[in-house]
Image (tube, rainbow, N blue to C red; front, side, top):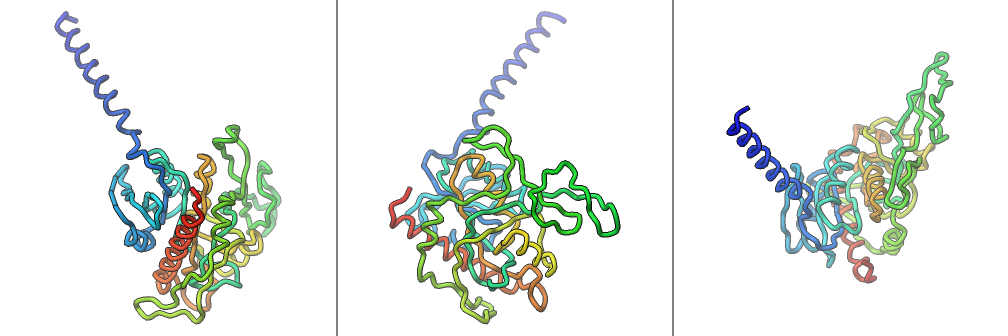
Length: 314
């Protein structure tokens, strides 16, 4: 190689290295340094109601996700859509944590009801969340008999046919070694604020004049479960209620709770029943009552933020 060729190669390498040095910090650089509460929803209609109440909005974008900062009920916040299902919410919650100084995580949205004592339009604030579709598919040793649990890592919960729920393996900021965990508790301080809520006026009729048979209520406590499946099956619904004592099931909350746990960030979720996960007498109710459920979830979240601010909590 000639001296000139060597010079060109070295110059090109130097330019490439300089570009990489310039680009690399930009990829991970935070958007701002203001401590904020992350307010997350899975899809548009859920978030639009909250965006309409946001003061001083400012938009940012990363990896195709739009983040909107501002002030909501006196709290500095960042609002964004997680996308539907477990992988999307995990990925985009972590993206938000990497780009903003997030102090707490709040999730607002719709869910399927599995507790027969709850009704469409009710809002639930579960005390803990589990990933009930983290599964081992057991082998069938005889017709209808499933005798093998594989590596024995199931959570000792009632199974549904060949489906055996297992805990996830996780690390956290406070516990860096791998450990097994099924239930992820919401933050006790935020849960106490949720329990104190009174008189939140929930919606019973939609703009399209679809009305519920009863006035929705706020239910604080109990369990919630999440998995990558839209459930519309009465038999499976009964199993989920019996096995996990769950009030609701959805496709995001437990995954978001796990990311929050791993990062050491307090978490809570507000979920309103848009359907009965297959437990109703007719067709699935979600498309009929989704707007009512989204509205009620947003109303409770706003009431929560107001009460939280009034208590002077961080």
